[in-house]
Length: 216
Image 1 (cartoon, rainbow, N blue to C red):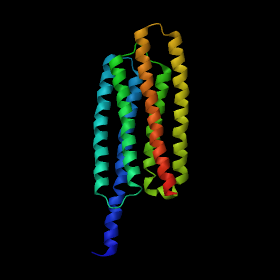
Image 2: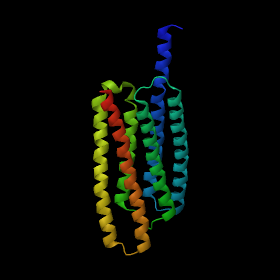
Image 3: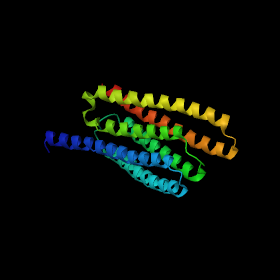
Image 4: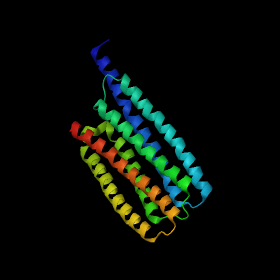
């Protein structure tokens, strides 16, 4: 086989990772959209239905992550560092897991009322997911798209800081004004996993930023 044909095989294998990461991000976006809708409804049955639908996306996400890892084990050439590919796949999967955990808690705890701040955090989680999808679409041209990728990572960092502020404000208000101890625990636990989800979003962004630095 000619050398150029061999190199072409490597290039094809290398590019297989890009659509898989985009597919993963698209799946996460769908789950994040459902989580936002779940935080907005006060219907108990709807909350459970949303949780089940998000579970389906979590299962699909696991399959995509496994496929990325399988491709990684089979690849001779990778678009960026092998450890970074694995770390990014796992970080994105963990972000989706956090979304699923948040949806489970909402379905199980069934808070008596919705909070606008909790809904706002869910909106920011969806924005994170949308940003990750946009990032993955730059992967194939990463070397020349360093600046826009960096700006997207900066936005994720801003979101994480904003969510931290919302977390502190909501938690302070909750302990000050909520007189029902059971309801307090419910809302506190839901808030905590939503804040953890935002933190995991920053972890995804940090991994991408690390890849950008190494590619630069």
